[in-house]
Amino acid sequence: MTAKHLELTQVGIDFPTPKGPFNALTDVNLKIAKGEFVSLIGHSGCGKSTVLNIVAGLHQATTGGVILDGSEVREPGPERAVVFQNHSLLPWLSVYKNVELAVKQTQQGKSKKALRDWVMHNLELVHMTHALDKLPAEISGGMKQRVGIARALAMEPKVLLMDEPFGALDALTRAHLQDSLMEIHADLGNTVIMITHDVDEAVLLSDRIVMMTNGPSATIGEILNINLTRPRDRIALADNPEYNHYRHEVLTFLYEKQRKVEPVSAHRKNTSKGSSKGKKPDAA
Ligand SMILES: Nc1ncnc2c1ncn2[C@@H]1O[C@H](COP(=O)(O)OP(=O)(O)O)[C@@H](O)[C@H]1O
Ligand SMILES: [Mg+2]
Image (tube, rainbow, N blue to C red; front, side):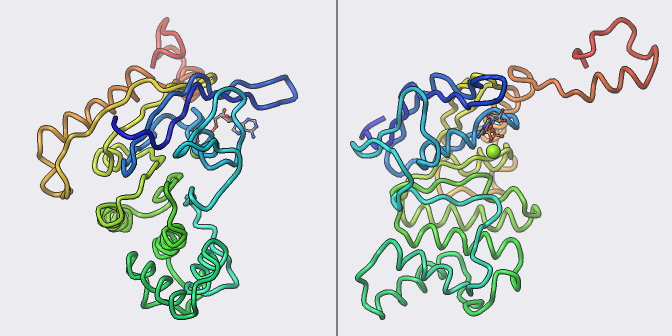
């Protein structure tokens, strides 16, 4: 890793609960270079969103901390824009106005023309200039995510934080947005941390995949470097042995090394008497 850009050092967090503190994360150490695209992957509930929220400044780490370009992260800031799974656009503002508002809040002092040009430029990046005056309720889920991404990009963040940004979309829309995101990342070279539960998405988009262990006290289990050349083409990669090797590595981590035992196996044992002779409930 070359330049020190974003560093998570010994990050841990305890959440207060009625039963006492719950240690969600422990000893999370990660150094990210400028312009790197990093994915976080791990089973549901392991602590991915918590890591992202600590970097966003929405949660305070109990131990350790986060440093971005030499300054400690203590609160949310426009240099760390977040895109959530459920867009979070303001429903009473048009597509154009949603992006404009973010620009007005973060880049005061722009002339009227510069403001308009900048809003339009960012909506062009996500191919949404055809729907400027539409309200969020009048556009599809994929389009809303596009606007959410444009809004985040328009703030010119040093780091773009994305929490399962395409998780709620159908496969085709997701593929389109992944391709747009790769293009934008190639153009702008911003640092991205993206949470995903989609192994193909992680391999296609990332420079590194950070694989997290199951909680409580979750931490980084393994980090996989993805050395596929860019630009990446999903069709060409489908039968690329290197691509499939990376996929296999992530799948092995998730389903062998960090296999999550779902209560459904215990349920199945109880409902199908005798069919699981002597097996422990969590062996299925
Ligand atoms: N505010 C909170 N208070 C108590 N527990 C929390 C809080 N936020 C998250 N957790 C717990 O921390 C763990 C990690 O949650 P999260 O980061 O949302 O997981 P993921 O995003 O990987 O699905 C879970 O066990 C969750 O229940
Ligand atoms: Mg989450």
